Length: 245
Image 1 (cartoon, rainbow, N blue to C red):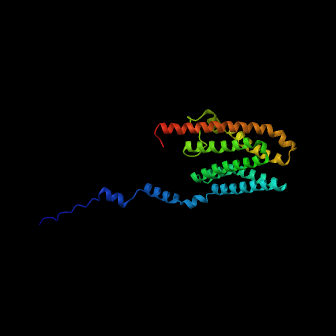
Image 2 (cartoon, rainbow, N blue to C red; image 1 turned 135 degrees about the horizontal axis):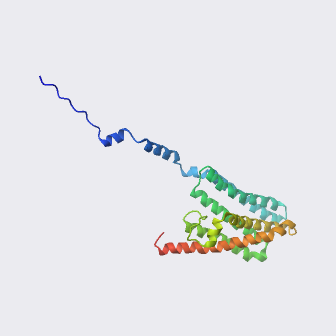
Image 3 (tube, rainbow, N blue to C red; image 1 turned 30 degrees about the vertical axis):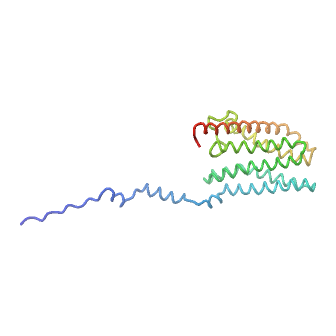
């Protein structure tokens, strides 16, 4: 009597094996992807962006108080300058929070840049009102500040604080050497704040003493703005010549 033939066991195809036992790496990647999936509404409430909204409110309140103080000849200007300066100080913290909580975003970068530029522009408009004989200078500085940063951001295709090697050496030095960057930015803002304060207290000895140093920072910053404007337009023109968008 012949022995029954053994039926060989069917081997699962490689494709089925892969379907039956998915890779743990793939699972981990999917889980991580799900964890990172957020909506645009979540971006609105990132901690650094909330800080940005606070800056907008502080600037608006500060500028309003300065205008009202000039009209009513009251001491509201002191609180106005405190609020404006606090908004400027918070500019450091929104970037710090973005790094700390890993909440960097294009929305936050644009909010930060627009808040910076509009805040400075509003204060310069106020100074045009406080010093009508210097209207041309302050209005020119406002236009230069806003346009140079806008062109720089457009040319960089992202954040304006980039230090590519093809940029003007003045711009690279400004963004690459942090002490110089801080001296120009902080000194310029304090110069504008000091000019606003001197409108109400012309004989303030402390402000008059430090004003030359602040003026130096302001001149340096606006030289950088001119270089930044030229460098940004040059970068855009080079992209056009290369057929890039």
